[in-house]
Amino acid sequence: MVLAIWLYLLSGRGAFWLARERDEAISPGQGPWPRITAIIPARDEAECVGETVASLLRQDYPGEFTVILVDDQSRDATAQVARDAAAALGAGMRLSVLAGRALPAGWTGKLWAQHQGVEAAEAMSPPPVYLLFTDADIVYRPDALKGLVARAQMGGHVLTSLMVKLRCVTLAERMFIPAFVFFFQMLYPFAWANDSRRATAAAAGGCMLVRRDALREAGGMAAIRSALIDDCALAKKLKASGPIWIGLTERVSSIRAYPALEDIRRMVSRTAYAQLNYSPLLLAGTVLGLAITYLAPVWLTAFAGGTARLLGVVAWLAMALAFQPTLRFYRLSMLWGPALPAIAAVYLAFTLDSAYQHARGRGGMWKGRAQGNIQDNIQGNISELR
Image (cartoon, rainbow, N blue to C red; front, side, top):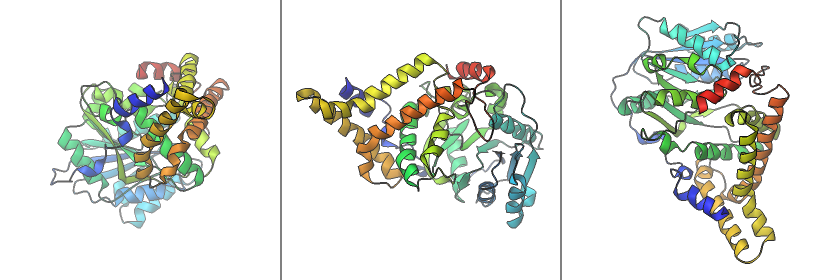
């Protein structure tokens, strides 16, 4: 059974493990270059937001491009840092900083901030053709937006998303970040998400280029206002109206640091139980599935004998092989491959912690807000992820 699982994952799940869906394969072309507005929700992001704003304002984009930063009631100098970054480039007129309104019931903070940014973009004359949803810790190479727009227009995509390259410097990051990307691709095979014939829908919230008219027709951000897995919920909504695309990229990266194991735990625990629709039954099934898929090969190798041990060894080798393309993407040693069972065991513990934090009323904790314990959030996630 264990070997059969890995044979299926290697051969029958959209070849997710090969990590072949990438943005570098397309040439920027000659346009046309539609009007675009980037929307950055930012809460207590003074440490990162300056680099993000500067990288956006440096884009080598021939069309009209403006940036809206929604300061989500920050307790630090987020807004001023953003303004200073724009002023240093002589681009202050291309940045608008909005003071975010109080968070209403039934909304997550990020989606409420994005909603306010969309409102401001809609009020422009003329309004933008595309909205670029990006986070306050994301840095863009100067050619990134041009390539993103070219791909969106060539494919007629209503949503074009890049899985940004996450920071992978500290030991904790090297151990857990590539696995995070590997697991995400396993859950949402990019080739399936990019296939209009399949129901799979996925996006990476750090970088999403969305057609404004498609978003409006789908109900706007209000349609997913309580979703903690907001990027994939948005992808599901938009795929119903047109093609979407997601891929890995070297052109866009995150500068947010996860220096220690505790930082990784908080990142995963914030949304893991939401991914399971807050269901104890799905949680139990996930724990069992992870144990069989990742831990059983090690147990068989160490304690079984004969054919069972051989099957365990082969399954473990298949697992290590599947991890190699992601490790190469992050320029890490192939020797991390055999460590995937141990890494998966820690992620399993993080998932259980996510359920525990939800039970304590601290689910979805981000920047001082607990967002995952609201009944509206529970119902919203269930309805969006069905």
